[in-house]
Length: 244
Image (cartoon, rainbow, N blue to C red; front, side, top):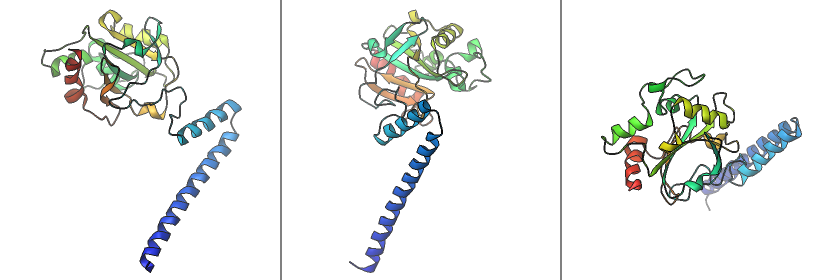
């Protein structure tokens, strides 16, 4: 082995050791800082670090996997709808499910829920002026050949952040549904997770849409700041195909 190869090998070893050392230092720092917190908060932080090391969601309330993985069964979890009814989303299996992930203060969420028609909800300061309601967007993209509401399509509006940025509750779902005229008889289910879904993993898919087929598999993912698929050009055309 020549000197140059030895030097390259040494550089790799040094780089690896440095990375490990930095990780240990950061972990130790977090543990020290956690030690200054109340026991409940300290245990929560330590649990999050352990889960992250195992490749699990940091928030223990989240289903696994989260976010959902393409072409696999959608993660199941309990929600509470605008009528206060609690159920598992898997109970909707057999219908096409359009999941909308909502932040009640997000301008895009406000636009797709009907801000242009009904105004701004609560404390919201503005909506996305370039977007219209979900129903009108679908009708426009499909040139009138498909529209909502539809008997075979359930729109599951999942609110993960309320207007305070905290965990939403059943009253948030009810208020949002009433304000934007979203009715269950039209297959619009406005729901909140039964447990707190806020956090780093959920932020990756807020706001946006995910399309689930009748077998409860994720087929199109147009959620989050960097979606896998385009909402208007990819997800919307798939809705009538799956609804047949």
